[in-house]
Length: 336
Image (cartoon, rainbow, N blue to C red; front, side, top):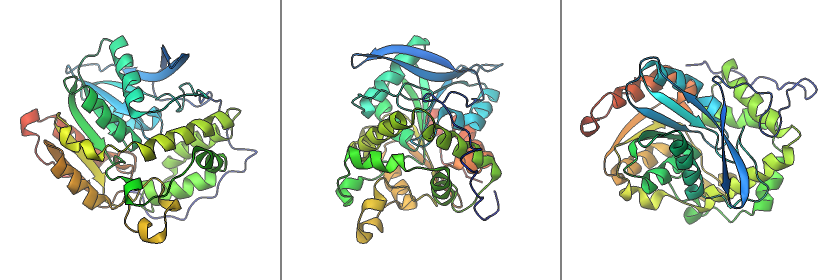
């Protein structure tokens, strides 16, 4: 694990990279393909990586990224799963990263699940292990609820949505307010937030690649479209809770939780007494484990919101350990 370090100084804007509206100029770890389809009366393109193993084990893993992540941030997990024999499909959802950013789109987790299902159908995939991180966890839950017989297993990595922030007192936030906030995002603000929330106060130079990815997209020629889609997506996340449907999840489920995670959408807009009640992941994880019918919980006591990036060794040992067991016998797997 990286040692606690002072936050590095941001690059001057004149030297910092700037990427196109579909993240042109930022290299992904594997070849990128695009799935073209029509949705809501417009033509869209969904970027994805489709990585084949040298020695297939017959299983497909679909990796769903979080709100401030892209499919590229799964690079270590892709390599690990492929080495273990899994075919891996890692898409960028519409509105994110290398995929289309429409100026008019009614975002819902159902719509994103429909888009993902259509992508998999185009690849001839009818059964998959669905792995979702952060916002991708909320999407993975919706996917598993919509397609229970096509979801072989469900893996939730620090999923947000383990609580209903609005019901707990987060005030209404308009899309225009989200948009104004997103227009102010900088490399410095991204780095500060990630250091404290994603990596539990720790920092490693390897994390700078992901700061550069987001900041370069935010400062590029598609800045307004990127910020607008981000605002629409935040509105979706805040106002479409999944926590009330945990008891309906059918596939065997693995919860992988960094106990030092404190993520809660809209927390900074909430009054102090409400803010203090939000984002308590150890407690939320145990509540989710008991609500989901066939769930296993793995906790990483010293990790934050992105355990697959902060400590990939521990994360992948736990993940592969659980996946290697028969579905009916996938018991708790030690994190270390």
